[in-house]
Length: 226
Ligand code: 5RP
Image 1 (tube, rainbow, N blue to C red):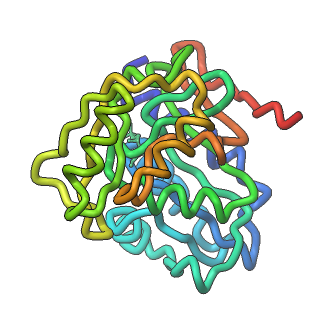
Image 2 (image 1 turned 180 degrees about the vertical axis):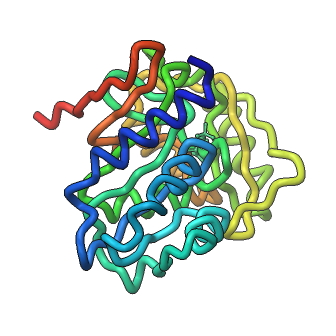
């Protein structure tokens, strides 16, 4: 099975996973990226069954609206029953690296507002230890050099994503070489760098359900909450 077919398969599994939550009054959190796009396109077949969605990016909002799905501001929606999104890397604890599409801040906000986070990936995203994928950070433009210096102090090799501005008007700094073996501690430490809006580690609020598409089909893993 090629990667595009795996994305389709895991998106279809996500629709099944949240089927019981697609009810009148429900507002669904929706992520960003090519896997999330497959999910949006399949969710459109069920648009009469739920009320609206909260989008984690302008691109996702446009795609949802293109299918006739109502998009709400999170402030109008309150807490969400479920959020569905992809990831760039995922470990056995369901900690994630996200932000390959540059939408990490809104993604982290929507994830934080959701009771259940369903992460959808193909098997190329699964790793033992996070960090082969350069960690994206959203950074206030005037703090660029300050943040990059702080990241170098942590052993990282930061690089500004060329020609990219986030939906919030900020920069993305992709950072190789960080030691991410303790994801929650790293997430906190990176949040403490002044000028960082958000970092792409999702460990303080990891996924609750992980759907992984591989050659043999879609595997479901649940986070151990004990
Ligand atoms: C966007 C993200 C995406 O979820 C992540 O980059 C995965 O994207 P794709 O499904 O295209 O591989 O975090 O900011």
